[in-house]
Amino acid sequence: MVNDCENYINFRKVAIIGCGFVGAASAFSLMQSGLFSEMVLIDSDRERAEGEALDISHGVAFAKPMKIYAGDYSDIDDASIIIITAGANQKPNETRLDLVKKNICIFESIIPEIKKRNFKGILLVVSNPVDILTTVALKLSGLPEHRVIGSGTVLDTARLKYEIGKHLDVDSRSVHAFIIGEHGDSEIAAFSSANVSGIKLDDFCEMRNHYNHKESQEIIANNVKNSAYEIISKKKATYFGIAMSVKRICEAIVRDEKSILPISAMMHGEYGISEIALSMPAIIGKQGFEGHVPIKLNEDEINKLQNSANILKNILND
Image (cartoon, rainbow, N blue to C red; front, side, top):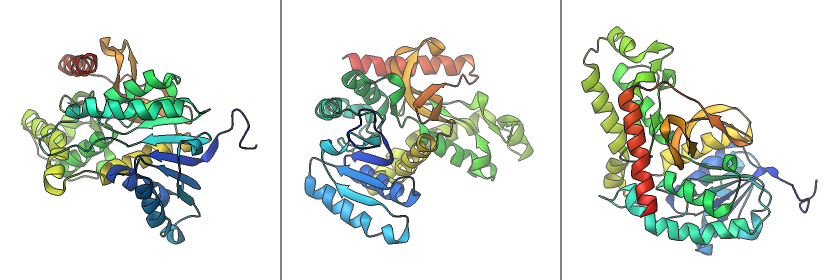
């Protein structure tokens, strides 16, 4: 294969648009992962991109061979994944939804540049509010829906597993649970389908001498929902957790794992929701989004999920 082949994709190449805290941390995480042999960093501040590329490149001697460089949109054509982290930073006391107008404007400058190219890979949106911006990216890019996904609630779900694992004093990797809906204030902890190594969550809690299920679940859900605000109040930004989430999504794509991750993708009538990208468990492989996984939800969770979708649609349509 050669680079000017119409359908050429370099499966060992990734592009990151936006070299702020999240973009740089994601680049560092991907360098360490060994998933790619080439990474191009693009930023409106070219010197920032050059500095990050140079800094991260100095660690290649301790990892796997990799070409890391600052580039522009002409370098993205053959990338297997384009990761968009560009956007305004979330400030203390600011919700992810407060970022909507600022970041939609930024996407209106980025996505048309991608659309001009013969890009055949997966577009991964990480910028917030991720569900709305995934919807915007899909509409602006004209790409097939399966190739435009958002990082969704992958990080929130990791936080949920961490909190449940801490509560029960078990390995969080043995916890199977999802945060669904908006990656933000209206997110839902789907406790009705949660389990620990196949044992229903409530039953496992009682095995560990925890009986106040509703109270504990409310505390855990609030800890997850407020964790980003807490981090931002203490260190002004969150970036390591989302960077590891980006790496996990890329692993599922590059290795064609068919892993189930709660990414953001368009809804088409599932749970009575349509016309918005929402964070729900989905099968992820080399083609990107391969379909939603219909987890069991109780009536209250479905109502909250529909409310979450309506909040996002109303903001997007304002």
